[in-house]
Image 1 (cartoon, rainbow, N blue to C red):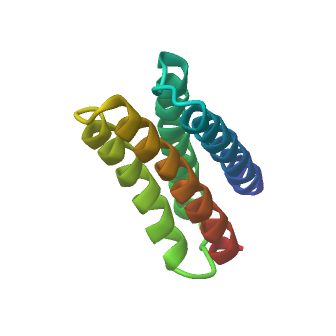
Image 2 (tube, rainbow, N blue to C red; image 1 turned 60 degrees about the vertical axis):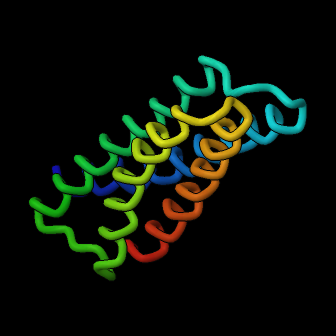
Length: 123
């Protein structure tokens, strides 16, 4: 079962990078067209956070099963993403609509980089 959990954890990391990049592109388009972050973008952002939690649970399962990341920094990137996404969401929710869209878009690109660095330090 452990190789299956590791496989899912690795492939899900790639899917999170793609999803974060798509949300970043969508947010960038909204910024360029001077649109506020809509409900669909916010829902996608929260889904990104939820999927990050699932990814973390898969990582914890792999760790309990005996798999270890190459560097402990791998875990730091994961914890960062899990805490950073909701933090920015609640912080941005109290701002003007254009500021909110900017912050959420930047957060998507930031975790996209964190996911990539996590993959590089985990294998």
